Image (cartoon, rainbow, N blue to C red; front, top):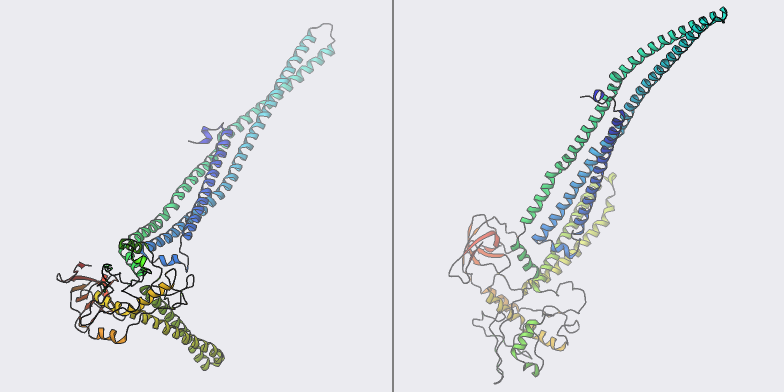
Length: 588
């Protein structure tokens, strides 16, 4: 099946078909180019989308990414950034392997096609020239034959006429013979030209044109193969990035599976726990008799007062006030129904408590006294850790400069040892300032930890400790609220109402403490290295005694023997509480 034999007379149609093939190739190149532009645009939009939702540095959003759900979202954003990178790879590979390659091939194809059809036209022009020569020779032979016939007829006419002289007859005879000779010559020339034309025509249609058309056919087939290979490359470029895209999607799935709702709930507790105890019951006020108000037994009363009398309130205070409840200011207000005052308490928002006193709209104090006790402790601890890191950095720089100075002393040609003295002095001053800052914040931290109820104490003990600490502070808060129209402190009225525990009472309470009884056993699920104060190290599989269960802070107090006890993370142990223990339950 060859174009040279089957399509020997379709030169013009082949020319149109090959031009159409080049147009198809250029159309495919344009298609791939637009695809690469779409991939680039898509990758850019994905990157912008990922960047848009990335947490801003040093902002509140960055703090929100400690939760497992938001960390999973951040991992999704990062994977989407890598996902966009794979689309950029698709665009780059398609541009280099398809668009660029086919563009060069089209230029070569156009040149080759032009050369082949030029040879075809040249062969066609040659056969047309031979045909014209044959036609001219044929016409000349025909004309000479007709002239010879006329000359012969004229001679015969002259010869038959008796009135014509012999000389005229001879002249007519010679003319006829000349015309016959010319006809014979034209016949010979026409025969020769015809043979030559037939030979040229045979070569044209059986040799030259088939060869040219065969080359055109091969060119067209190469074009078809080339576009097929390009389409395979088109698919292969996509297929090459599928494993990486699949890995990105797997990482997104893995991040989603890492979300721990229990852990996020615990983080909410750590973030917003104030450290306050819930308010106690409201005492009944009997207005039919002289008011004899007694201290209610609640979480704010001392339930451990064995051998101790209940503290009495003096001054204007008639009883214990929760810091969020406003004190009645007039008899008219005192006569309001109890249900109305309860509803007012439930719907009112706490504006201030006894632990802080700030002017409205001012910046937070350096000691974070505007925060609840638990949050203040965390902020102070965070500040102490940051200062310790800064001290370590300064000490590392000082050590490096000291070594450099020693090198300069041993090798003076390397530098002047005195040039680093000024910087060493600056570092020493900075370290001293930072240490003073650490001492200041550690003092505040110790003060806050002294106010907070100890985790090692039972709830009843906490209530008693708060009652002893807050008696004067609560009264002071209540009196200050009476002097302020909006029920809040001002800087002029009170800088800060501090709860100070008498050293003797506090020390006696803990010195007389008996060892806590065991309430169950536990098994260590993982190894825990107790490096902080108050913690204890355990080995995986070790059995220990439980002396205090988790109070909601994620720590359980355990005992190995009478001298070794401390806290371990609750998630690291499997606890089995005694059934007789109060509130006993088994959990992991």
